[in-house]
Image (cartoon, rainbow, N blue to C red; front, side, top):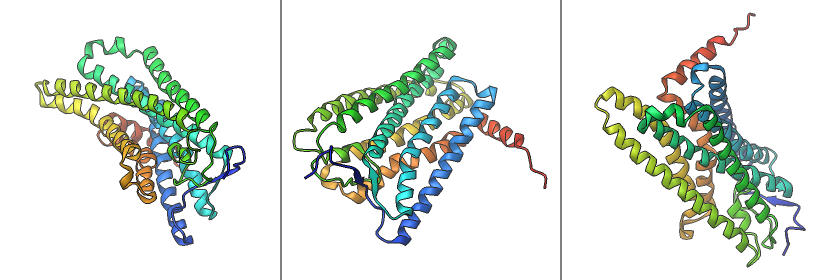
Length: 311
């Protein structure tokens, strides 16, 4: 047996046993990572540079893109490096840092998605009060609250997790240092304190989920009451991208952490974790840009400003 004071590294889950499949994993993750960097980078640049996009909706979208970039950069590069160098190791401090940054970013993103649901609710259900309720100062405060909630969550969970005794070896059944997998290494009763923090976090997350659901029930009720078909189409185009992102984020996360133990396996856990950790940051920019005319025009304008090098 070992404890946390004697651990110097953890062993992550390998994607494959052969060098060829490890290279395939590296190439696939590299493609997804570059797509996430490009997509989110373009959204951040377009929103920052185009004054027409200096509105609450795009301000929150910029924050979402920053969080997506941080989330995928916390987990994917280390996994790619391990496959490329044919190793599974991650240092103890590196694992703790990965847990902290992942929890910080993923919790802040969930809080931000809740704030974005409120923004859509005010825009659709209370349009006459939108300028008052969603002023620049209010938006900054709400975004700051989302980031602060993520920071608080990460500090509490990381401090609790890495202060308990880890007596079940150092093998993590995941491609990154995931909190539930670290807790599986704990001694018999030493994880109970962290379980209490987890329960509090789940209750808060459930409250955010209920808020999002109630907001969209009222949004769709209001949209269906709009007499013109054009007005309904415009309202849906504003809300459906956010709803798609929320649905993907919540459904994959809930399945990852609440699936029955009877169907749990390392292979299934790996696939599900990819679906909620790796895929969303790459897909979110595409979801938001497909039906968004203003964002498309801003991106076209951005490309036109890029100077063409003369040979």
